[in-house]
Image 1 (tube, rainbow, N blue to C red):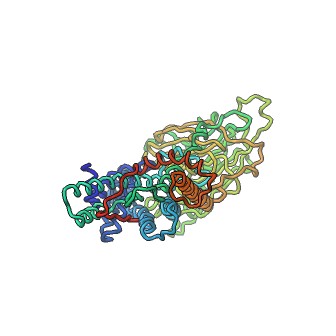
Image 2 (image 1 turned 90 degrees about the horizontal axis):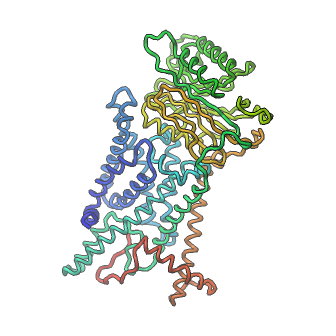
Image 3 (image 1 turned 45 degrees about the vertical axis):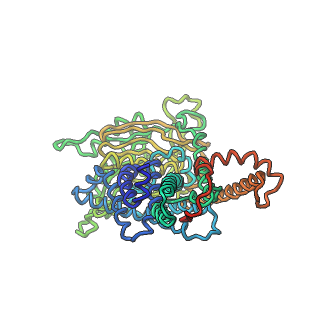
Length: 627
């Protein structure tokens, strides 16, 4: 009781005191769905206090949000650049920018609930914020140089909604997290309103005058969302069941997760192709060692080649200063691939002038580019494709490297039969395996459109901190989920997360996960879907086909479903009122019996969300809704 009185009496101070610890918990490198929803719910309750006061008082809120997110990622942020102080400042600025973007849909939401015409559907008033939230982060992350990294999009705790990724990408979970925030804010507003009601009742018994009671209730409601709980007569209101419809819709969106298997596809079956991969992480080279990094990677590749068909080196594994060095390295790697019948993803850095030997001394000659070349055992076509990194880490890479503007390649390789496979089952080999690639921070953004569905995404990376490694691996898993592909994540950073992530076609979940320390190679085998070798006929996922347009279309479908449920709910309640002898709205007589059966059950559910019916308020304490 004391807590409720303190919050309602001093909402601005109370909410700002809550924001800092909540943002510290919620806005880590890998945000979780429950914590982000709770933080958003508090911000929704606070939005009235923000917009009803001086605009300058929003500054402490932005600072608290930025400081909380910076402290949550303090260890990673202070090691991102050479100077801990500059790293902290950059992280604080990034947190402030993301906080401002997060508050924009909250402000629009408040204006909609206060100023929208009464003819607007209560459902669209309450569902506007989740849709705005998803759309805002869709725009912000597409323009951000770090994409979804550091955003408010949950990467953990969304298992119940992960099935939505092939259809809506991460916009689906953004809608869900904001929807639960509306539910939390609605329940919180009802809880806080109970405190205001009790104090008004107490003031009445203490003999306060009506105008004093009105002053008290106006003070209590500053910063509290009422969601239709405040009214002169406690009857069912559209706002109440709109909140109930939203909660029911969010529960319904989690139902498919119970029917989607989280187990990986079988490695050996008629409908799968076994794939064995390896990530090469050689022991750290001592300063006085005569061996070059290229020697170490080739030696480690030969050690794992008997157990894998596709071998990947982490980001920036080797460096070339001239085109001659590059050609020499490709020859050595080509000999290894042909001798062991494997494909090697050689990650490298080279001068931005294509590794040419010219020495013009220009600025571009001092820049490098970060690439990966897939080397084949086929002597006729030794280089399957080359790719160069498109998204550079701001400051740390953007001043010394050149970003590519070319989309990721997509190629198909003939995968031979495993040596342990019985001879009768080898007739369908070699089987086609479609491959594409991206490098580290590229996975913070959705993949550009590809001609067809890839089976495997090669993902070399090198992160500087375990929390960043986990965040990037989670984003790589999201990219695999969106494309319906597996992701070979090979991170050469210290304490990095490594493994094979993503979906088998029609099968969701984590396939393999191994945590390395940047100095231990690993091998994994898994199955990818096989449909008789017709690569062109493999259907892409809806999100891979339509991208953000598909996500927006499905958001419109979800809003339409809620609107239809609202109309059915209104008829249902009208039918119950007619059965009880009240005035209906023309509800058909043949539906009255059905309404009379369902109405008590629905009433109990609504009662749980908004409290049971209570007597009328005293006429001397008129209270009007803030929305």
